[in-house]
Image (cartoon, rainbow, N blue to C red; front, side, top):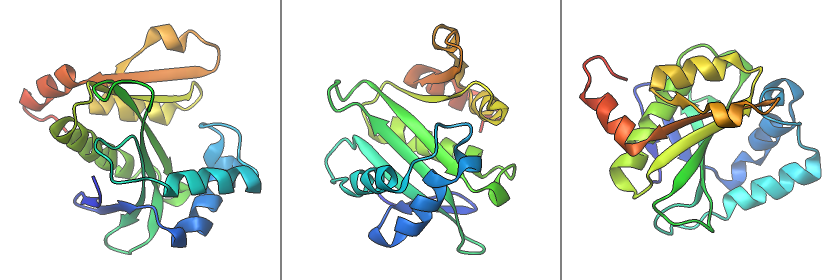
Length: 181
C-alpha cells in the first residue's frame, strides 16, 4: 500500500517535506475538536517522526498518507491506517482522517476511505477496520453510515467516544449490492 488514487484524490505516503502540513493539522484546535486535544509542538513532532518511520513490512501496521486534490494539487488532509503491532495480522485496524476545513463536505473523506477499505480487504489478511471519534462529530456518523460501517453501541456508551466497525464479511456483502459505494 503505497500511493493510491480515487477519481479526485491522490493518496501518497507522508514525507519529510510534509512536516509543516502535518503540524498545521494536528495543532489546529478547530480541526482537532472532534478528534482529540490539539497537540503541542513537541507532541506533534514525536507523532510526525513516528509516522515517518513506516517500513514496507507486510502487512502494513501503521501508515499515513497525504491526500492531494488532483485538480489543484492542494494537500487537503491526512489519511491513516493503524494496526496494533501486538495483535495478529488478521485482526482489525483503525482508520483515521483529518480534512482541512475548506475541503470538508465535498465527499473527499468518503471517496478516500472507500478506496482505502477496498485496498485493505483486497490485499491484506485484516478481518476488520474501525473508526473512533468524539461523539459530537456528526459528520463521522454520516460518512460511516454511507460506507456501510456499523455503529458499535458497546463503545459508544462511554460519555465522549463513538466507534464504527466494518468487517471483511460486511464489506463483501456491500460490494455485492447494486449502488454500493
